[in-house]
Length: 106
Image (cartoon, rainbow, N blue to C red; front, side, top):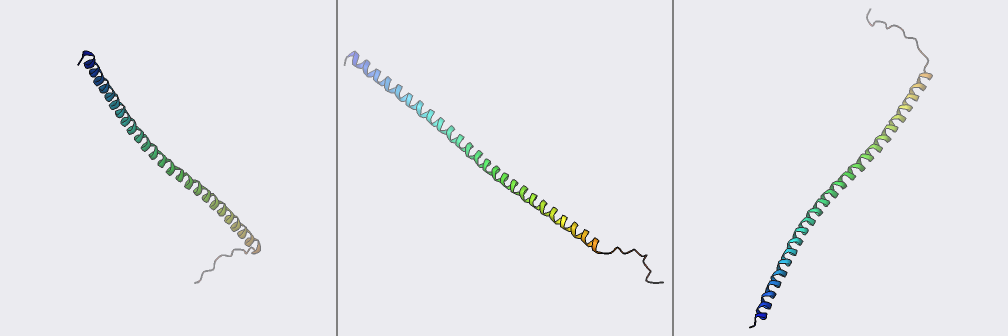
């Protein structure tokens, strides 16, 4: 074997080792990036779930406010009708003078 052949064989092995090291580095980096991506996805999913819960609470809140406003309006309407009924009954009844109470036993 000539010197060139040995050098060439040695250079090939070094080149192959260099490529294997680069491939290992790329695989390690890929695993690291994949782990970070999975963590970010998990964080995003948790945040999205919390957001959906808050949106649901907001819907419930607005529905409760609307129900409360409707009940307040209903209560005001009933109160107005009651007041009208009281005023109408007072107008129909003649005013009777108050007489002092007579004792049952003398």
